[in-house]
Image (cartoon, rainbow, N blue to C red; front, side):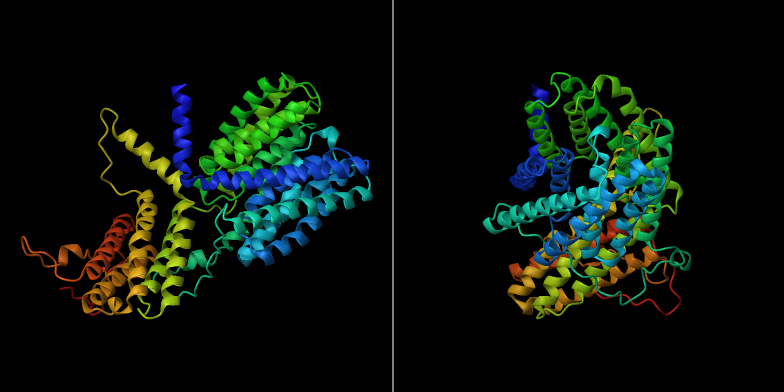
Length: 552
């Protein structure tokens, strides 16, 4: 019992204000509405039950893709989703007639969805919707597959429209009533004005990062089809689904290895638990349906806590679904576990071997992007309120993108810390680690908020001589860290606190507002010092290029 309450306290801490739980309630309501609508359509049109399963899957997954969508994105989604669903239905038909052609089209579809991300957030959301009906094909038990006729395709498209409409309706109503916060749109990146952090010529010759991720996805899904059909002709979908999940959204080799391990372990645990539970329900029992929705809601809420929870809950839902269709979970347990392991291995191998994205390269690029936004913010005019707010939003977006890399890096830091405590091992806790960069960038957000709020409230503070001088020094150090990231010659980072003259017992002069601005700038510079300790110094500048900013 104590372990249960400990887990509950941890779960509540990861979701302050229960924002994610409220979002889960909205998603669950959309799933239930889509389920009820699909049941009515299935009954009156005399369709197969696969359309009901598809409606729930589309509502559950589209709710996440459309989380930050505006009205134009939602209209685009209502056009993309039924078209994608119709195409997936046709691929489903081909899987029984020409499986090799269907496998190739499925693989191309998943790769296309990833490749579209290169065209911006709106195209990325369209790509996310494009792949959802394909994923729905993989969760369907073999005897609940699409009917082999073209009329079925039209009904599938209608079901997609209904599911997408319910998601849009519930999300819009939740924002309007204040149940969930309004979506924050990603700011449009500003063109890079300087080249301190530009990639090396060898990196520029490589394919675009989204092209590389698309090729990795194609290799993972295509390889999973080959391996799954060769080893388990009747259950190849489990291999393909696991490989897709492991490879999806990979942000470097360390990230995909970490997520692959979490998802494989979570899926295996979910399968074992659900196999034991599913045996208590007979085929087509309503209690199993209630449990499926409860586990789906839990998966939606705990996804941000750990991918293992998400993978475990979703795999448990699949086990319960197969049991609802009358397939014995006990007989399939070993096969399902082996297929999950094989799919995870294929996904990890594709991400590591096909034009791999090194974690350190992704970390450097995203840190450089965040610092570019920081430099832009510090260079803004104090009276230009829109520029200040825009700069803060761009930095927050960059920090958020960097935070997506945090889990594997922090896990590595913890592992190294534990290894350093072993007998005979030197402690390494004082050595800078790449995870410290993520923490340092996140630590800049609060002081930058103080700077922007202060300048917006009183623009004269921004042009105060002491604030302006310190601002220029911090901007110079930001440029120095960016040069270190890009290995460009120039002055190195120089800590500001050590260069400020101090008198023992003296109280700093200035108004409270001015002192808050100065303290915020020093906090940002301390964070830049942490980054400089990780990335090192840039190559030495040529003689005469160094110009030290004066501080007094």
